[in-house]
Length: 69
Image 1: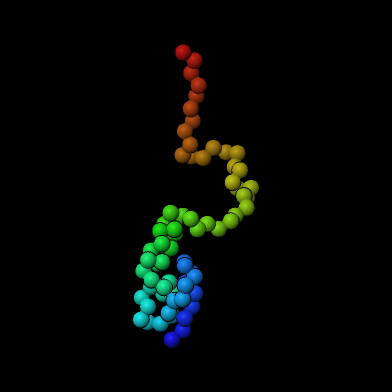
Image 2: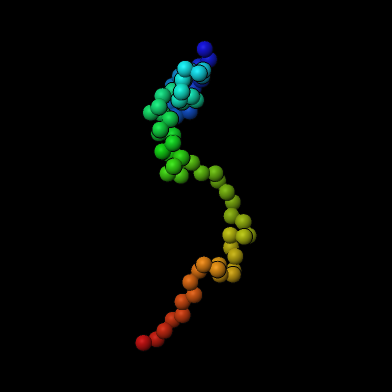
């Protein structure tokens, strides 16, 4: 029986077929991780690219004109 560190709580987790929550130690840790993933807490750092600063308006942007009353 191999034991690993739970990625959520850092406690011991059994790595075999008897642990349906693996690599987590319990369903609780598994659900905490799923909740963090679903709420977008896990993000990869990115650097802005030239494409992020496009000068052309996008096709779904609204073109409003000012009107004097």
